[in-house]
Length: 457
Image 1 (cartoon, rainbow, N blue to C red):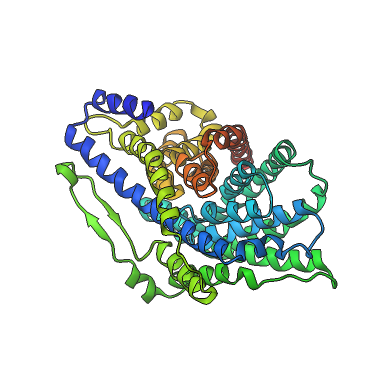
Image 2: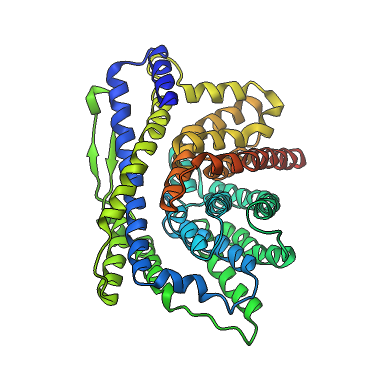
């Protein structure tokens, strides 16, 4: 609340009007509702599955795949996070994967922190390429060859950076759980994802994350189980159906167009600010459909609505002020450049050193807005302008923006609060503290890699 109060004072110091303040609050409220729909859906399905005993079965379903719990942890943390980011995005991986890891007996803080760190790579393309297609190509009017090059460059840099993050995760795992015993096997599992990811980033960037996750799962199962292991997939069936329901609109244009209906609020409080809710496009409905199906099939006596609703209110109280701060910073530019634009202008004065810190713009955007796509929309034009003024390669800078925006998901307050709340974790700050150093170092490392690429061109 202190941060909200300070930002509110700065908002009026920036000479923004009261109508813009109220409009920003309206946008913040609707943005919060969009996030809460995902949180409620994840809680609804999880509570029903837990009541039916399926979560307990999931926690033991991979026991015969490999005797090491850490192998199973990293397999699910990488593969499932990538898959759900690729088919749904918008915080869905953080609402699902940590719960499953916790059910397997892993530390809650570790589970949330690691999933968000890994999601920094997968969020580059987000839900079927939304961050690069809607966040960069559409507003900047990029050509398809440019998008192909930006996506491939971002994927290669992202994989190298994620390899660095993997060792940070090893250290984190040792601090909160146990020392990692199978680093080489885990690195190989990561390679099962990384190599196909780069290939698909060149061929089909919108489906790169989903396809790479599937390839990783198939290769990992064959590699780990050999001819002896058995996997009990039956308790996973609800999440499999959920994934299909989330993926269908991405595959069928007519269905995507039909559920794309939105409830729009235009010119809120006379501010000129607009916001909308897309209730049919939210993962909420697939979550509820699968949850009701499980409850009926398993003959559950309750939908656990009271339990989910109490948690939802607790999340709202913490989440809304954070979203409001972001909107105030974005919309403060009424009579002068906004707080966000001031940050971008400050970095653009660095001259040749701009490339090194370029990903920090993307990280800042994701941290403030809670979205890889919106970070690209907000800071993409700044990267474009900097490329022209400093005579730098535009495609490389936009790739670094994409990388930074993805990495920023690990410290985005919206993602942390939503994921930690679903995981029943009360100390959100601990996740932020754990992820802050790896995220900033990863951003700087991405900048160094981008600088090296520009020097070689």
